[in-house]
Image 1: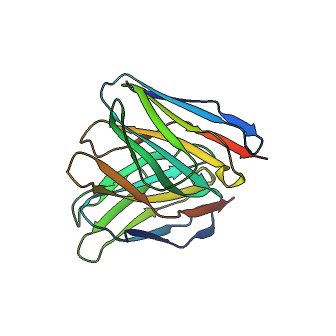
Image 2 (image 1 turned 45 degrees about the vertical axis):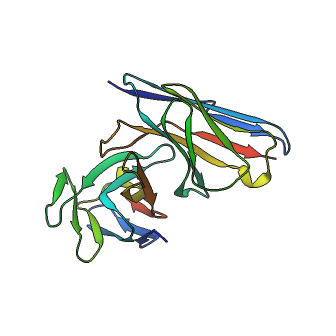
Length: 112
Length: 115
């Protein structure tokens, strides 16, 4: 069966510091991968998606970037965090054309 | 602009009540509608609907889609305190080029079931 991992689970970072969040998927190959942010406990906003290694599409302009160095690894980064980057970050995957999309456990980021 | 609107935004009921959650949408390249339950952490998948009028059921939960009127409802009968959660509606769209799919989420309905 497939499993999706995210780490860290929680993170407190000062404004201006860098960020790196990691997501890995087990039990499948060539998945579509997604990064979402959820602010104030509601509504998920799609940040980035990837259909393959090195292929990244950005949905909204922002202070963040994403990379996919390996087939089942998706990384969310920032060079300098802003207060507005605080939120709950969720990684998700689906297998190619499948209808269902599954979420990882999430990382709760607080920028102070 | 694509949008998914859920109502009500919050709802408080007593155990045993029946609730109906609503989701309306206006999106391009509709593919399917999905319902998720979120309790503190990651959303968990409930239902996926692609065709109008076909009810999906899982225990006390059921859902139906109306593609003509562009909405879906999620029903929960005989609610229990364990049903307390945020229920998210999402519409799956085909991205340009047809090689990828995007979920657009509503803001969710916060359901609180009191004993």
